[in-house]
Image 1: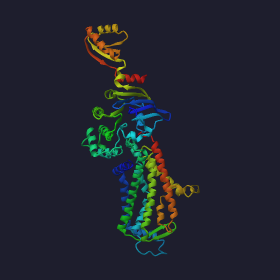
Image 2: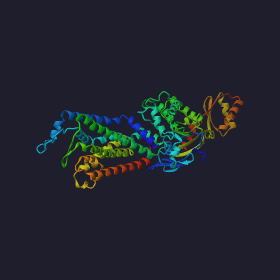
Image 3: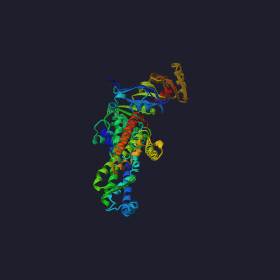
Image 4: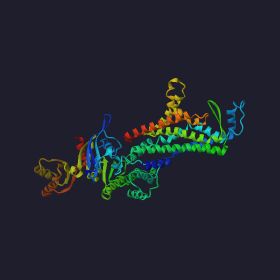
Length: 303
Length: 280
C-alpha cells in the first residue's frame, strides 16, 4: 500500500481534438492541504472530475488510497467528500432533507444527530428546516462542506470553493478548511485560481497550465527557492545604492523613489543586506518581499 | 445502496410540485367528464345507440359506472403519457441541469444502481398516475352511476359484456395500459440520459409518440412491416380485454413488444449513463 493518498500520473483527457488535460501528474500525502493551482481553463476541474470518476480519462493513471480508481470506484468514493465547482442541492428540499439524501448514499450510516453536528460545524444550526432555495451562495457552500463531512471521509476535495463568495464568505470557508485540517485531521485538495488562497492555506501544491502540470512541491520551498524582489524603504538612497553595488555587484537594483529601492535577490541574502545597511548608518524603515506566489506563478506560466 | 437510492428518488418525486400536475390534471378532467355524463349522459348514450335501436332493445341502465370508466380510459389514456413524461423525462436531465447529478455521481453508488433506482421510482410514479386514473374513473364512476353490464362499440360491432365478467377485464386492461405507460416512462428516462436540460426529453418523448402514431395510422403499405413493432401500435392494447372472443394472442404479442421495448431502452440508458461524462 502506497503512503500517497492521491497519485496521478500523466493524466490526459481529450474531447475530439481539444486537449482539456494533456499531461498532469502530482501526488498528495496524508495530512496535506494540497493546492491545485492554475489559471481558468488550465484543466483543474477536468482533472478533479477524473479523480472522482465523473469523466473518463483518455489516458493516464489515477490511484487513490493506493488503489486504481477505474476498478475500485465505490471503495475510493466512500472515503472522499467533495464539492465540484459548486454544491448544487435540491432547492425544493430543506437543508436537512438534502443532507439525508446525500448521506444515505455516502456509504455510511448517517443519523440525524450527525447531520445536526455537521450543520453546527458549518454555522448553519437553526436553518435545518429551511428550504435550500432561500439560501445564499455562501450558505450553500457551507452546506456543501457539511455534506462532504457527513460520512467522515479521509480526503476532502474542494474545487474552487470560494468562487462567487463575498470577502466574509471567503474568510469563513478558508477558516473551515483550516479547521478540517487542524481539528479533524483531514487531507484536503483545494483547487483554485486565486493565488493568495493557496498561499495562505496550502502546504503543498501543483501548478498546472494548458493541461500540463508545471511544478509541484512544498509551497514554502517552491517560493523560497525563487529569486525575490525586495522593496526597501530607507533614509539615504545614494549611500545605500553605492554600498550595495560595491558589495553585491551582481544584484539588479532599481531606485523606485527618493527613499525606496527594489532589489532582485535570493531569500538568504535579505538579512545580510539589512545588516550591511544598518552597519553603514543607513536607517531601514521597511523591507517588503514582493515576489510571492503571484510572481512565481506568472513566471512559470509565461515560460 | 440501490434501495436507499430508490428511497431517495421517491422522496424527490414526492417533494417536486410538478409530480402533482398529473394527478391534478386527471382529477380535473375526470371530474369534468363525470359531471357532463351526470348532467347529459343519457343524450350522449342515446346518440351512440340510436343506430341500433331499430334492431335491438336495450334493457336496464346502459349509462353505468363501468361504461363511464371505459369512456374515460379511452379518452384519457392517449394523454396520460404526457403527464408521465413530465416527471420521468426530468429524472436524469433535470438533475444534470440542476447540478445535483454531479453530486450524486461522486457518491459510492454505481451508476447502474443510480439509474435503475430512477427507473424504479419512475415506474412507481407511473403506477400511481394510472391507479389514480383508475380510482377516479372506476371508483368515483361507480359511486355516481352504479355498476352494470358494459356495452362496447368497436370496429366489429357492438359487444355486451356481463357485469360479473368485468372485474378481471378491467384489471387486465389496466395491466396492459400500465405496461404501455411504462414504455413511455422508460423512453423518457432513456432520452433524459442524453440531455442536460429537462424540457428536451419531455418534448422529444411526445414527438416520438406523435411520429410513431402517425406512421402507425397511415394506411400505406410501405409501413406495413414496421407497424406491428412500433410501441405506439400497442398503446391501446388494453382495449383488447373488452373484446369478444377474447384475443389472447393479440394481447400476448402486445405485451411482448412492449416488454422488449422496455428492456432495450433500459439497456441503451444504462450504456449511455455509464459512459456519460458528467460536465454540467
